[in-house]
Length: 158
Image (tube, rainbow, N blue to C red; front, side, top):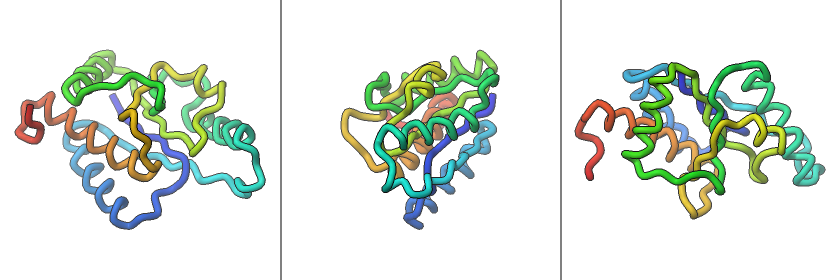
């Protein structure tokens, strides 16, 4: 199983980039992992929220592949919240299914209806709101944490 983190817009803070890169490197010891960046929309200031969601949605669906069989999970404020151990169990089930999993972080206004329709699941990191750049870091760390939990390694403490 391959895990992909699909994000809209690049991470600009060099400190966050360095931390994300560190966790990406760590993850390669456990499973194939890739972070795919969809470029930010040009002239987004001139678009309504709905137009922005539509255009980003088209790019997300293109990146996912319309006929693809991947399990697509949206990071969405209305998604299911997991404790770290439960998220590790979720990843274990995905790995057992042998199906590639794509986690998607959308743009600032969320996802288009077409992206919601394509999704297999939604996950929320918290009831709090985080910047899109921080979400990337938090989520990559949680995937790493889940892998160490599954291997009974001493990273996570209950």
